[in-house]
Length: 259
Image (tube, rainbow, N blue to C red; front, side):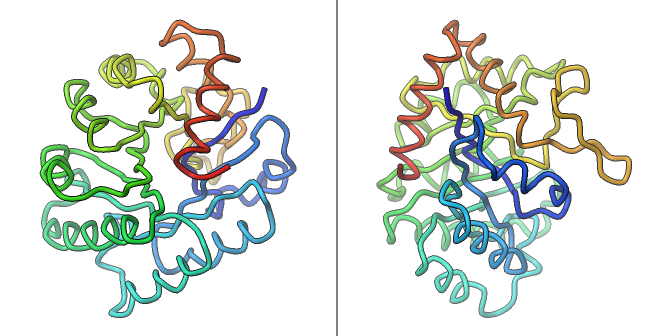
């Protein structure tokens, strides 16, 4: 039984101590490693060049749009010319609303570029679901599909996003206490659109559930090897054996990101 991590940030310095172990293989057969800004795209590209199981993804995260230089879009294109997907991109009204027009500009350009190139886009959304829906409900979306990573939006919006080509990745942190509404959304995701992720080093599991506890400077971080815990949580939620879910996710992962 093999697992696929649809969204992580393995290039992050917080994972320096475990990266080699994770990349040696084992149950994690493949992963999409997402850049968040110009300063980490080269690290993502190196990981992909050195490890066949890594699918690179390059983007400017909504938290980082104000850091982007004047040539950011051209530089993004140079990395995408070498192969890979677009992400992490998105919209966020949690950290700030002051730069939301700039977030929209960056999202539109990057999302359209994914469509133009025929690659997937990995999309972040926090407290901006209405705005995101307005962006995708009528305009073309990437024909290959796109990922709402760690989908935390309203369960009622799942059907609409799925009809516009979205896949949805389940985070093991959704089994932490107080996250029933997030779990309810994943009861409604069409089985052919289910994926699983860690978002490592972000979104750590509850300490009682992690099998690979990891901390950096006294702060808990998400170990990529805890991907198995996320699979088990989603399998329970959907009422199916983990092995059955793993087969479904492998097919969905290959369809969206390539085998």
